[in-house]
Image 1 (tube, rainbow, N blue to C red):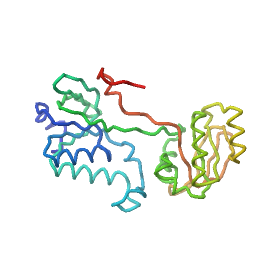
Image 2: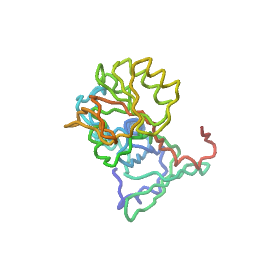
Image 3: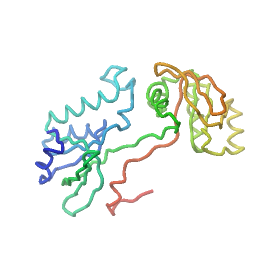
Length: 267
């Protein structure tokens, strides 16, 4: 059953066998199997997660290579509902351990929000991560290329960078190490720090040894058309040519709602 602010009260007294936080590929897969085992489960999805931003699923079998991630999510949601799962668009705020069950507090609605609490025997934490993107004055310029020719996962999309002129965007020196792995796919790599970090003499020497230029000037905008990257313009007016890129600036883990469970340990 698809829940919303008008009908969710029908489910607040139910003790679910499992509540799935996150409606991406992992969370929906879990929900489908839970439902097919005859278990009562609820999927809570905030929207616009990592898979939503993937514009072309070139490496996911069973779907056309040009299919966007949102189509995969839509199909997974429909399958989960078909097999009997409940589904709610909302934001998991907090999880409390009540000894014999868990209570999951959810924010529903951006305006005039309500905060229902659902009960479950188990919680599947599938809220995943979101990648940190370079901050530009015009963020739409980043979105025009992210998920198309500006990638965030070397394992997923390294093949699409094969022998192309690539940029590697970082914000901390250790992230530069990805350049020496990216070389599996292309030898044409330029490292951009976007003015975010200092680079040690040792790392500069290592980059020079491999022939990888280092540019520390902040990025002003990405250049290209129809989502195809053609270059980068920097704040000093200089430009470079490139046809693809990897953003390796780290990720934000969506796990704040688990902080209230004392048995968990955090690194």
